[in-house]
Image 1 (tube, rainbow over the protein chains, first blue to last red):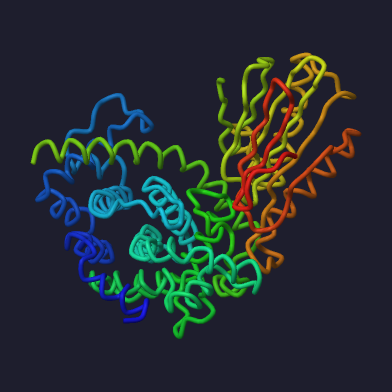
Image 2 (image 1 turned 90 degrees about the vertical axis):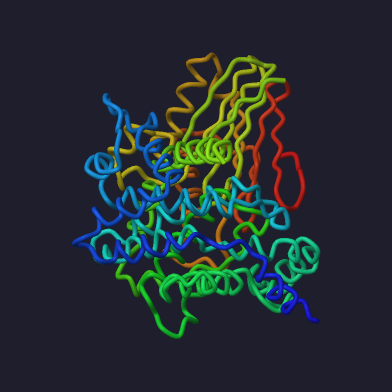
Length: 293
Length: 159
């Protein structure tokens, strides 16, 4: 069996994601009923409810009176926020893994993923606001393929790096050269197995190469740009470093320019403290959920 | 040995010669160290963007986010702490780029150009630098000796 088939073969034992993530996404795309429906879905999962409330009450939000119910949380913080916290916490508690082959700890991957999710969501404001939930979720999952691929990358790292250093290949081009497949493609396969909608699957598949996507969805470009910015800022990055190629065309397709990018970067940085609060929150909520079980 | 960690958009100055100052994951951001060997006063900034004009509001809360607001503060702080301008040793790292950098994404390059201009205006020279490329760098300043080291995928080197 060649390496690519070995990797794909292993995907059958890759963790699954709770169906509730898909249900939340579907509901949120139906704007009118969203808030009530989202709360209804979350309520059936006690650990998730606890996570959302814990996050709502975490210090950085600074409410004088504690938030005691989901309805109150959604009233104070908004549906978008509830969705972001719920999906982050579901993904975090199910697939928080390190990727030593890329020299990334579980926290590195998570921090980078949340930063890309927030960056993509920031890019969607205004013109593409209908895509907010899609790009946030795709941002959270864009590097999921790294977790499945990392062991193979670790074993073949010197060879992969050789192509990067000597043949001016990007890291993902070099992954394809050496392993027959890159982490973006593997990530798309995983998202597909999880029955995510095509816009999310394609955003993961083309996040390093949006110009090659057969259908130029704005979501793909937003995730690509957010990822490029977070790589540049060094947020949770691995030893693949900045060896990726950004697409100028993606920016043109979205009608954006350099000043938008700087704005998004500074927004993401401001959100980093929020990210850390979410990390702590998810960590402790995950631990207490385990104790309960 | 105590180590002070400088996060993105932070500025740190110390007189403690037993301390190390370190910053991680410099991509397109720039890390700049200043050090006066005679009085052993030193500091570091890790800024992310060239100019504060994109958000005056953010520059007020976090001046270390931008080169044009952060670098003057770093310089002022080391001088207040007892360093002398003509003895300052300045070292610079970061300003990396993604591959085939084009105009819109060249934040690393612009970060560096603004720094050059600012230092030139203040008549301060850069002693050594490790900028550009597609590496992610960690920068460390040892206060006791003034030694600055850079760690990247290519190993550890002294600057």
